[in-house]
Length: 255
Image (tube, rainbow, N blue to C red):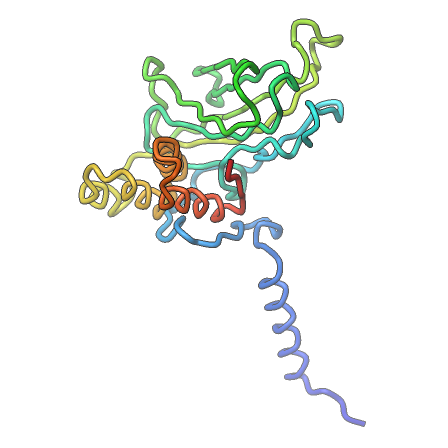
């Protein structure tokens, strides 16, 4: 009877490992998530010293409830996953993007909150449900607020209240859906080559966005492409850039 050799088992073992790695996203294994690399992270910065586990970019609901007909997970924070839900910015007053899937009248209100882990810095913005929804929304930290500190991590939260917080039967546990992530501000000078490439790009906003994406400066790349897309909604180049950025973080929102 033929018995396979030791080499056969070794080859079979490594073949099995290769199949697993090819067919399962790395994100599931707890490491860096799968990226299509259409634009993002061609030359990423070393982010090993930043970020931490935790957060969620898909909505989670309290009491198992939800607002309206959309499922809680349809609420989205447009942010990558890298050993946690977080991204980088070099802007002193960055912009954050979210998708609220609920129609007008299906929720009471929403609130955006940003704070540092020491709770010494805090910014809040209330979002009334009177504007048309479902919708992509962008929220920028006002220039009148103190700038985010370089090298400091901040919590970013969007809460969508399904009921009036002031009239809830349990004010300490209002029915809501929320997403949570983190942002770290860094200096362009910390990243070799970044500032020189930005100088070469000059006033070309799209090229600036491509450079930010290349180095993994997520929030700045998304802000520029998002604003260009809003200014010229029929421009196919900006729509393609938008789709590529979101594909790179395994997310799709075209509305």
